[in-house]
Amino acid sequence: MTEIYTPPKVWTWDKENGGPFANINRPIAGATHDKDLPVGEHPLQLYSLATPNGQKVTILLEELLEAGVSAADYDAWLIKIGDGNQFGSGFVEVNPNSKIPALLDRSVSPPQRVFESGSILLYLAEKFGKFLPTDPAGRTETLNWLFWQMGAGPLLGGGFGHFFAYAPEKYEYPINRYTMEVKRQLDLLDKRLADNDYIAGADYTIADIAIWPWYGGLVLGRAYGAAEFLDAGSYKNLLRWAQQIDARPAVKRGRMVNKANGPLEEQLHERHDASDFETKTQDKLEGAA
Ligand SMILES: N[C@@H](CCC(=O)N[C@@H](CS)C(=O)NCC(=O)O)C(=O)O
Image 1: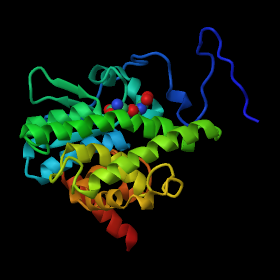
Image 2: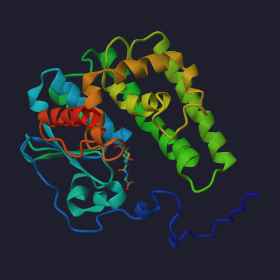
Image 3: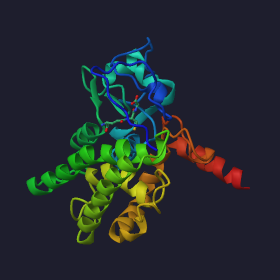
Image 4: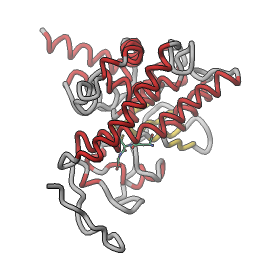
């Protein structure tokens, strides 16, 4: 039988809350230790990890480079959130919210910090004039879906994903509640993609780049081991879109950057140059031989 919890009058932090991320959860913000961030040669310095939120930024940067925007070249440094790197003083200066991704643009003076993945996508799209339509209707529709993802994503990750995959025990109430919501979100995207090639319309935009790592990853069977449970294959238009984006060379590269788990040949802990991917491809070929 489920244990009934009676909340005290005032909550106090007297124990870890369980689950795989218990060691990094704290009810206070700010740095826990002094640690400067490394700085590379490129104007754009990214401090991140290849979670869906991190992938959004590396995919956009790789798409910009693929589109010939050489000024978008960047150094990507690995932030191990499980080890608490996000609580180092240097990281907290770039993102006081202590979460990846965080970007420092050193091409402007003083250097501009950018945090929150949605803000980073918008900043880069505007800076380089790509992946964000300039006509008012197209721009607004892109931002509608970009902000939709920022609001909807935590219900998928922090709600469904947490209770389905990470909570120390399976509880029916939260799993049902968040499954209902996530299936509604999947149906929404599926209906949207029935008549549109991409999320904001005919063009591939930062809305796709924001939504794909979460919802594309889910229907492609890469998140929480939940594709069967959610009957992901039934969202045919969403699956078509997810596969189409998955095949883009920049997306393949963007997924590898700051990846520190999974098959070794897919991991690129740090990225400082386009040739870093070639070294990985070589590793892969040698591994297969
Ligand atoms: N709304 C934020 C969410 C970022 C976020 O939740 N990042 C997670 C990894 S996906 C993180 O850094 N967690 C570390 C922590 O909570 O201490 C964004 O979109 O950038």
